[in-house]
Image (tube, rainbow, N blue to C red; front, side, top):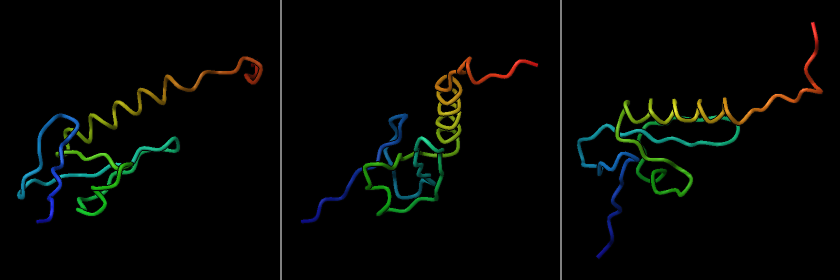
Amino acid sequence: MAMTPVFTCLCGVQKKTTNHWVLASVTPAGITFMPWDWKLAQSDDIIVLCGEGCAAALLSRCLGEWKQAAPVDKELTVAV
């Protein structure tokens, strides 16, 4: 008997057959959202999201992290 994977969103909701889910890939270069693909969803580097609300929350969280992660080097700033 083959095992069927259970997909769970970051918010804790489990995927059902009629849900319209989204996939995301987060890298240091950016974030990419993709339509649902069963095979791709099984990849360890893919984030499974239950819909637009969780996708927007992930984007917001990533934007906040990127904003905080870029310290300004005082030697590289130019005085006006």
